[in-house]
Image (cartoon, rainbow, N blue to C red; front, top):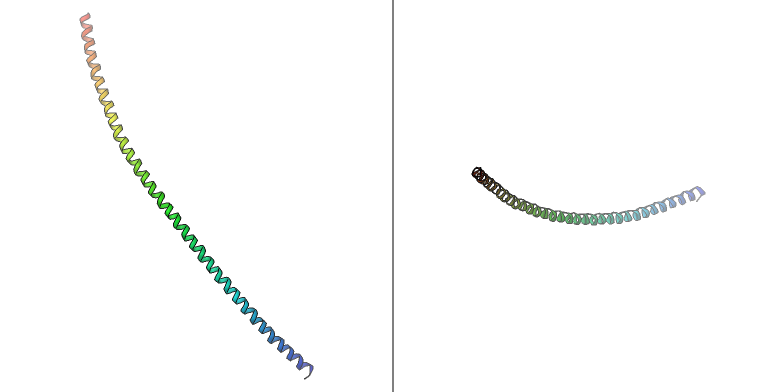
Length: 120
């Protein structure tokens, strides 16, 4: 074998070894990328599950607050109605009292006039 043939054979062997090495590197990289992809998907699933749980808890709290708000609103409406009735009764009593005082005042005026006429 001459030098050129040896060189060609060595280069062919080197090329074959390089190809084999590239295939091994590619296989290892592909394997690791698949592992990373799997871990990322698992991580995303965990994050998604945690987010869904968080949303569920927030929704439960909002529902609770809405129910409490409805109860407070109903209580306020009841208080307003009750106070309205009481104020109406109070003002009716005030009006009756004022009318009574007016009648008494007119009666007192009549008596005053009668007394003043008798004195004169």
